[in-house]
Image: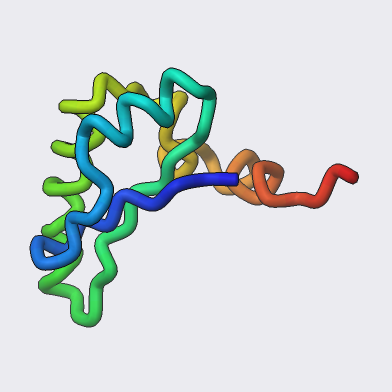
Length: 78
């Protein structure tokens, strides 16, 4: 399970306090630009800002990891 930090300025749904609480509970996060064009990729900084204000570090954010580790996060282990 992971929560999304949507970095689109009009869609900053997950607030820093939610990111902080998720981190406390061991819930991983993903930062998504919700980009519909290449210009929207610059919005990543807003998502990173939310994560930083929530005291998240790289190990708390799934999409800071190498590709093989990202894939491993989503493999069914039941």
